[in-house]
Length: 259
Length: 244
Image (cartoon, rainbow over all chains, first blue to last red; front, side, top):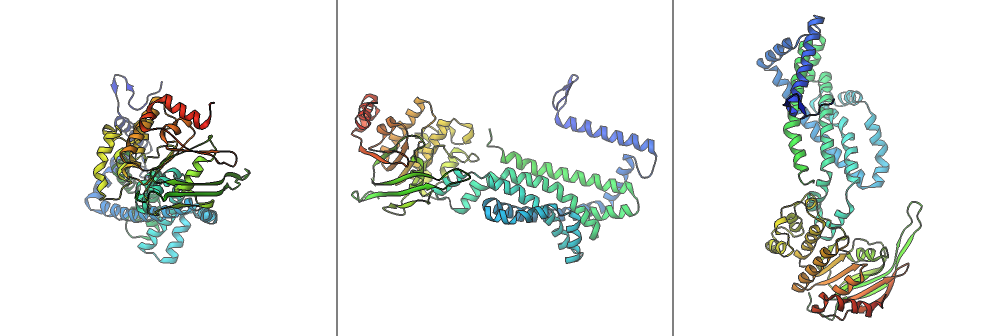
């Protein structure tokens, strides 16, 4: 027997939120049981973690660090999306440029994140600019590859229509090109966000003096597992919230014309 | 624009059109020595077998395809050109009304005509629907409205009523005649359907051969009133093309 989301479970119908709750509480319960069996300070029970979280919230460290991280995420994400889209569109529309730059794209795609971070810090110093740049450079090739696919799939029919009816470049971009690229843009944003916030933590651990990554590094040096889990869980919650509050409405809006 | 009636609106001269060889396929010589003038206000049907280069010719005239030998000369380079394509080519992410409004510059006085035109083509209720949610026939009417809102000096049409059932296609032809008689404009109408060509056009140009060239160029001797009469249309078709 299989139960799908929204399918009857016994006599009660369970919605999507219900399933999420059941799933997460099961995970929480497993964690609590494991912690009770192991009885080690390296695997604290959920309650201890919540206490640490509350303490960090009250002394203001939690928010200060999360906001510092979010600002870095915002800037590196924005830079990566804009630069990556521009490169992707260029490569998708101009086969000659694509042939020439394709090996570069492959090179940067396969360059380990750690290498980019280390080199940025060596070349530009342990600065905010180096940190944001390192994250952006990590993400740009992914965005470029996704947007290149989008640019390749642009409809020649609609471009001709825009040409005949003298749309001009701005009208064409806004009403013909961008709506066609929207699904690719959303795909790039989604994978972008999940990749960027992971790399930002590494960058912070290496060379910043605030942010979630910095805090995790301190906790690592002290083997302070409750602190590590408190920050991770708080950050996961914030990222999920951003996903639900910003990306989901954007997806719904761009899909409203579909049958 | 129609003040100098003796001067052709458009001079077509396509000496040669060859699609270059791509990926193993040989070069394709599609058009050869096609030259004709189009008088202002005339309705010219270009007919011939499917795949015979009619659409290629229309794309060349529209300026969408510039890789050919010859030249296309417009009497006035600022002429207002509209194109009704074989598929409606509406923007799926814009509503019917937005699709029509978009071909006009912002603040253009013709924006005030959109709703009346939508009513005339029977799309008043579908004004705010997205193209994918309405039928192909309705999409075609929206494409017609988009062309007519411009009050074009030249209207190019490429099999605009193909792949519709017969009553729907006939309804759209009548709609076209009505819009056209309300505001006469120079029309180039590509179709493989000879009956449709005779019914709508004041002149029929027939392309044939490989590469295609003009094999027939005749005026259609039908009054407006006679065009709705299927027997008269059939008789005129037989006069021009011979009895099949």
